[in-house]
Image 1: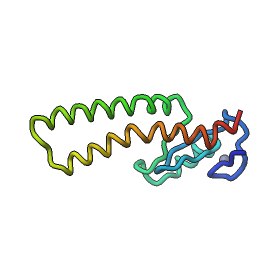
Image 2: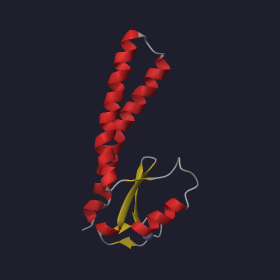
Image 3: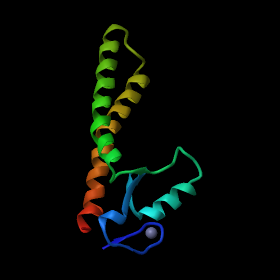
Length: 118
Ligand SMILES: [Zn+2]
């Protein structure tokens, strides 16, 4: 059984379900509850990201590729002039986040919500 994070009622089918990533947690909402929830969010920066949509799946594929391209060009650039250690550490974190977070969110969304609904 899947419970809506906003209203606490059951979500009965996949068509009613919206899953969203907030921080590193995945939450399930009714489609309408998600829209209300997003409209009441205080700022753009902390907005949750929808996962179980086509866009979410595309992001899951594109983000790691972009992350790899960025990482590769940073490596190439740093062969000529070595950037400060802090800059390199930031790039490594960005790269890892781009590779790890989208598939993690997809997997978590499926395990926790989508696999329990028809
Ligand atoms: Zn709800």
